[in-house]
Length: 559
Ligand code: NOJ
Image (cartoon, rainbow, N blue to C red; front, side, top):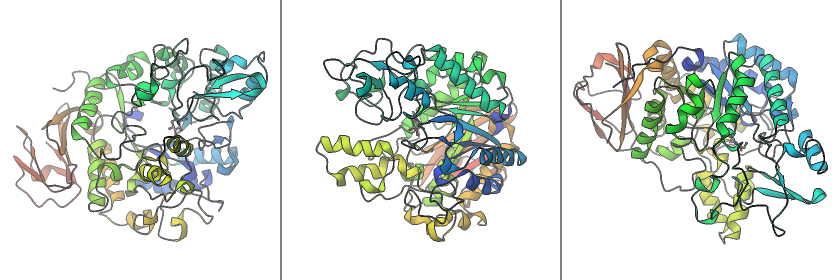
C-alpha cells in the first residue's frame, strides 16, 4: 500500500507554517491597521505555538486596492506597515527565534501605480508598453469577453492611448506580460534582491494565471459556464510550466529556500509537473479543490465523499514524487469551522476535529492566523461593513442582476473573504487587544469569548490542541514523511487514515459531523495505551476493534 520511495528529508517538509495577514494581526501604533512592529511583538506567542515558518502576506508599497496584492514598489514597505528598518528587525527577530520568514511574491500583476505601468500607459511607443497586455477594442468594446476574477470585464479602457489593458483581478491590478523577457528579468532581479537580504522563500501568488492562451480569443459563452471553466483561457493553460521552470532556474534553485505556488486550477493529476522533485520547479502548491475558492454556494456545507476523493488524489499522486501544502484556511476563504464545523453547538470540538483531519496528512501544514484559537466567520450588516474589493464588485454585479442589497449581504456573510480578515482576537479588552485605534475592519462580535488570552493557559483550549498537534509531528518523523492510506474510505461522516513510515505506523480519525459515528477499522488494532492525542476524553477504553466516536471526536493512535 505505502510507497516504495521514501520522501527526501528537508527542513521545509518538517516545518509548520503560520500565515500572517499583516493588516489584521497586531497594530502597534494605534492607527487601526496591523503592522510589522505589531508582528514582532507577537513572535514569542508564535514561538510558543511551535511554528517554524511565517508566511507574511504582502507588506510592500501599495495603494491597497486589494490590500497589498497591488504592489507599486516591490522593494519598499507600505508606510502603514512600517519601513525597511522594521522589516529588517522582523527578519532578525524571526531568525533569532529559529523561525523562518517567507514573503508573498505577486508577479502576475502590479498596481496601476507601479512605475512600470505608469511608463507603459504613457504612450504606445514607450519601451515598457509591452510589459503589460494592451489591445485595441473590438467594435468600440472590450478586446474580448474575458471576465475578471473579481467580477466584471477583465479589460479597462485607457483614454490616453485609446487602448485597453488586461486585468484579471481588480482594474487597479494590470497583468504583467510574461511573454516579455525584460519583464521576467526585472522580476528575477527583484526576487534575488530579497533572497540575498536573507528571507527564506516565497509564496507565489496567482502564478497559474500568468500565461494567457495565445490569440486572446473570446470564451465560448462565459455567462453559462461555471466559475472554473470561465477562466479556462488564462488559468493553467499550456506553456505556464515553462514560465515556472524559467522562474525557478533563474532564482529559487540557487538558494536554500522554500517555494509555495498558489495553483488555482491545477489538479492532483498534474501536480507532479509543478512540484515533482526531479523537475526542480516549486516545493509545493496551494491547490483549491478542497476549499472551493470563492465558493458561491453557502448551502453546500460539507461533502465528505468529495473531500476524501480530493485529498486522496493529492496524497497518492505526490507520495514519493513531490510534496503537499496542507491547509484549510487562508485570507481568501471564509473560516473553516463556520463552513465545515458546527460553531454554535460544537465550536471547540469541530475546530479541533477539522484540525486533526488535515494536519496529519503527508505535507507541510499551514495555519492561518486565528485558526489556532477557532476564530469564526463574522457578521456584516451591509455593503458599508465590507472592505474587500471583490465584495464591492460583487454588489455592483449582483445589483445589475436585480438582487437586493439584503440578499447580496446574506450571501457574502457566508462567502466573503472579509470573514477571514477581521482583526486577530488577542484578549477581551477594547478592540480585542488588536490596538488602540479604531480597526480598519470591524472586530468579530464574539471576541470576548474567543481570544488568545482565554486560551493560552487553558490546557483544553483549541490553541493548546494545535500546540500538541505540532509537537506530535515534531516527535514522530512518520507523521511527517509517512505514506497515507484512507481507512473506511466510504464512510460519509468520518475521515480516517493511516500513516506508514518503515516500521512506524499511525492511525488518525476525525468524526466531522454533529452525530455519533462508528468507524470500521478493518484489520487494524488500536490499543488504548497507544492513544497519542484526542480532542475529548476517551471514555470507551475497549476500542480495539470497535471504534465509536462522539460528535466531532478526533483521535490519533500509534499502531
Ligand atoms: C490571490 C491572493 O491570495 C488574493 O488575496 C489576491 O486578491 C489575488 N491573488 C490577486 O493577487
